[in-house]
Length: 305
Image (tube, rainbow, N blue to C red; front, side, top):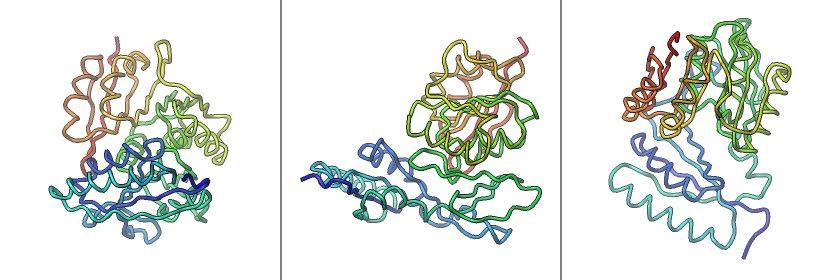
């Protein structure tokens, strides 16, 4: 029997080497394939923010609507995790019942103030924070959209953005999620920013966050994806997945202005060579491949021609 307004929160702790496999299992059944990946945190050197603690397991969460299919889906997840647990340490599956309001706010307790790079600080919209003059504060409430700043792929993009963005650059944030990268680009004094996402939930979340950061006149958030004729942009931010980057490589290159920069992430270490080769074939010159844990960002420049 359906229970209107009720959800199941499924959570599990996993060894860092098993995170991708566990996330794939949870995404198969979770609401809109959504999976929250929570790195264990420890106090950072500044005594205010937190940083990742690689010595502890990672917690993964997903949510199921509590309907007639929920019990079967939960059972299938348990079987899959049991099999994976024979290869890497994976904790027991924890199941919690949430009402609609609790589901919408459950993840907020795990979202800390986070320092990324030299100046960027990601601050949850519901937390108080007094910034130092040199800090650039991004105030976010991602809702169900991707992009809290906690995942290494987002942090790699933010760090590369801080290193490479020049004032006035025209920027595309492809797959904007919560809008975190678009907001960072605008606050780092980039030029006009176009933020695109196919998910209507992400589009609304990004628009809210843009308004929250008082950047509505600087960032345009639209539903959609990269198409022929978009651009030219002097910088493209693409925190996607390796498969999408492979498919989009020619479009990404063509949308860049001569000497324009691509910052791409969402790539596992073992996928980096294939993605870099595809970008090279599309006419992009690889500049750097910063790494954090098992993830790599690719920073590339379009040739002059």
